[in-house]
Length: 150
Ligand code: ATP
Ligand code: MG
Image (cartoon, rainbow, N blue to C red):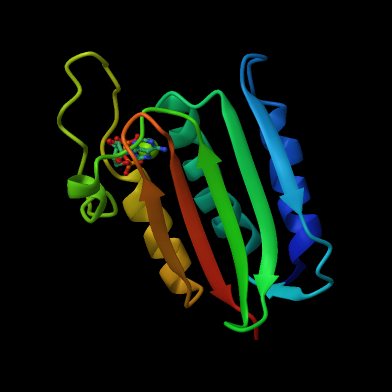
């Protein structure tokens, strides 16, 4: 599908907000790029919602979602940032693996299968894109999606 990237992102966040409890706040920075995003609406929405769900599950209370383009790289650029527990650098390379879950969780009790990020990455790969993470323990995490402009 040819989506308007800005409208698509606004719609995803608007719908997601309806599912939220009040203690979570989502700040958005969505550029009106006017550039078409060639993507599957359902699957790409699912990928972003997975990131939002993780952001909250792992302690985020203020989420920042951005959308824009990077001209030099000819990509759409989507970021999801949280202020949760973060991910130690030594685990970051594994979190997109099937069934992988970070172990050191003595003080927390998060349930899950370790499939969310695996599935998310498959979706982004199906759009010829990339997904990466930047994080420091106790300082939250930022997930960065890049999808080529076609
Ligand atoms: P599922 O999504 O299948 O219910 P899950 O959330 O454990 O289970 P993933 O979404 O694939 O699995 O995430 C893999 C692991 O990466 C998580 O177990 C968690 O340790 C870590 N993780 C993912 N997102 C975040 C985040 N925003 N902040 C901190 N840790 C995260
Ligand atoms: Mg998950």
